Length: 85
Image 1 (cartoon, helix red, strand yellow):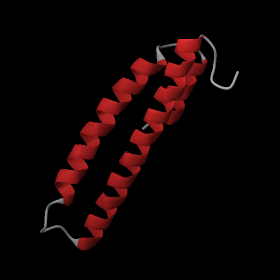
Image 2 (tube, one colour):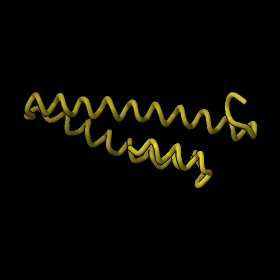
Image 3 (spheres, helix red, strand yellow):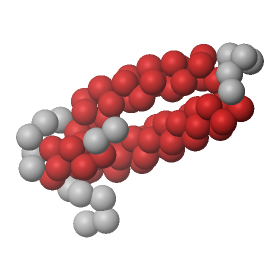
C-alpha cells in the first residue's frame, strides 16, 4: 500500500482523507481475503505458507494504520483543527 500517497494527499489537501482511507481499506481487505484463502491451501509448500502468513500480518497492520489515520482525520474534521492543536 502506498502509505505516503495517503498522507501526502491529506497534507496537500488534494483529496478527502477519509475517502482515501475508505478506498485503501477496501483494497487491503480484498488483498487480505485473497491471502487468507491462499494460506488455507493445505497442499502449499511450508515456506510459501510462511510467506503468506507474513503478507497477512502486514495487511492487518495496514488496516490498523488506516484506522488510526481515520480516527485522527475524523477528529480534526469535527473540531476544525488538526489533532494535537
